[in-house]
Length: 413
Image 1 (tube, rainbow, N blue to C red):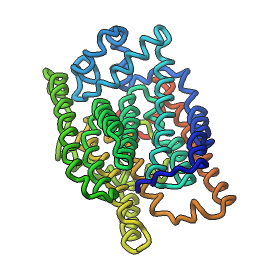
Image 2 (image 1 turned 180 degrees about the vertical axis):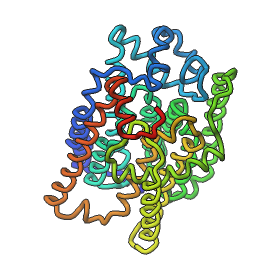
Image 3 (image 1 turned 60 degrees about the horizontal axis):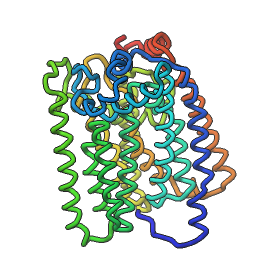
Image 4 (image 1 turned 30 degrees about the vertical axis):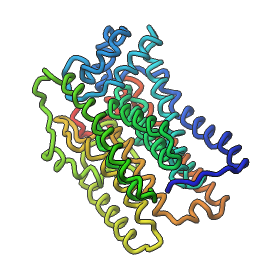
């Protein structure tokens, strides 16, 4: 899966200028530029940002952000310091107009994510067409709207960006064996971990990638030392997290195996949200209909993989592991008032994108270019329209809560 190095001048020129990057940027900006006029939804963003403006307005709190929880006043069990640091930067830059800067940063982070995803997919030896189409679908997918339009989800954007960068640098290190790529890989992983707790499972994905696709078995010894660095970073994170959450009161939340068992149905239901992202509620609830159809689709995929000998099972295993492993951390937590939130799918859904790329026949991407362009353009347009309408739901508190109740009467509002 790691691409071979080429000295071709043509390829070097193509690497310097790729019109697809500008298309991805343009569509992402076109979709989310409307958020620059938005305010808060008062669904956690007021508690995280608006009520902590005095704290976020002081640059001296940058280091202190690593010793407090996401809500700053020790009212949660979430440790996401880089999100807090980024809020501090936005508030200092924006001053009285900080809300627009907060939304601008979210949009710019998402643009970076889409471009980074495109680069990552190409490094997985996917061709330009499939990498571009997959990144385009990610850019306009309605499930990703809450991650960008909702200010409380800054940590999610940082997690996705640094996780993708960590993988890119890992692939570069395996290909070139240059220490700078290893250091950048470890740094990106550390940033991902201090962005959101989900990153704690990333070393398992890193290891799986090496075992599946790295042909240099002699590097397994050096991999052991890399795992020691992962452990050291994890220990540092755990230490600071313990300090930050010390003194947090007992919250009415469910963690662990009991929460995981309740949340198992998120796996099939998230598949439905990915394939049929119609009428997505800001605050979704479990649905028996989605559960049943999701299970049917998962079983169909399993049978398809078993029957089709032409499918690269190593790639399917990696894509499936990406989806499931990165979904597990959020499934270990159950909020007392709602079932799940779509922004938590932002990173796991990349695994689903990889999965369907490998399941679809290659002539879907390499066949009749005119027909494929029409089909892909039509799908992109439909998803863009759905997402554009969904973005508006996050413009202000009244619009948000009206949409939450209208689209899901069981949302608990």
